[in-house]
Length: 407
Image (cartoon, rainbow, N blue to C red; front, side, top):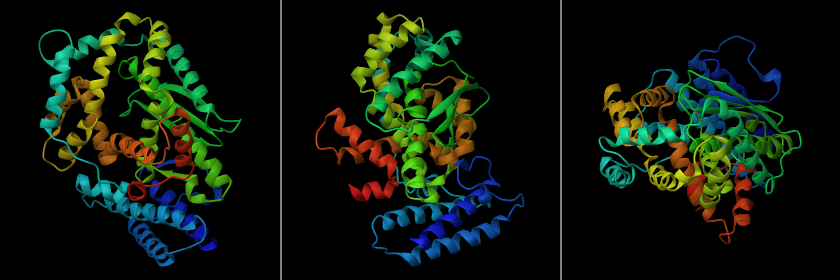
């Protein structure tokens, strides 16, 4: 136990030093202040040597047959290996998209090509009204579902309140948990949760582009309840505070934890709002708050159901762009055709790839992996049974390979 605690401390300190070379690497830290760097920046070559020595130490400790220490060590080893890979990235060593998925996120996502997505576009073409290019027709259709700026605050608060109420029925949340919401702009993401520790989050919503009504539940559940806010609070409560596992006091964005963080946040939307219940709440509560006519909801939900099948377009375009198979212009054209986004939003998405590269897999593949893994644990299809196993995964995180092996 003591030697793993020591390894965990070295991992945290290493991560904080890597963060000095990459502003977005450390997404959250609420460990001891004295562990933070004193201002001096350690060269990447020295950090790489340190990381490799920690990997070797972790390997030498296996196996450990003491309670849950083996699982802890396995998870820590994967993160140390990921740290080495990220340092190599900062040193200018090129990874292919698939190599990066494995090295940083412990993941091997499925691949889909245009032929797969063309079949989905045919379904949408039959649903979306109007004539001309499907992309423009969908944009024109969705104009009626944009939340007016002066209604955004009340609509989002209603969604957060409902998501929180549903989550509190099944997950014991610290009484002091809280968050604030800020409206920001000029970001490559649509929303972000900055976890600050002590069960507090800052949730930022990017207002560069109009926010459609269907995004509100997504954002409320993904960023808040039972998504990132709850995931981080659960780790802090069960692993850092209760067990003293300090490696969980830091969350490195480009690491295996992100596949579970984003995957559970995306699947958490479905857990909190099963599709039929979501339709009812949005139609009866959010539509009126946003001054959107509920009578328009039937076709809207038919289209949304099909649109969700296009999530892996992100991976296809990001892979080709990162691997140098297409340039910026071609990537934007692919996004406009297959993600059905405007040129401006496609440019924003491309900026996300440029900034975060293979991170895109954490949303779609992460969601599918979490959903499939939890399905193997539930004894029946009741809502309560799913809520039983979902927080258990948040309180004892697993990586992609661990969830695959467990299956």
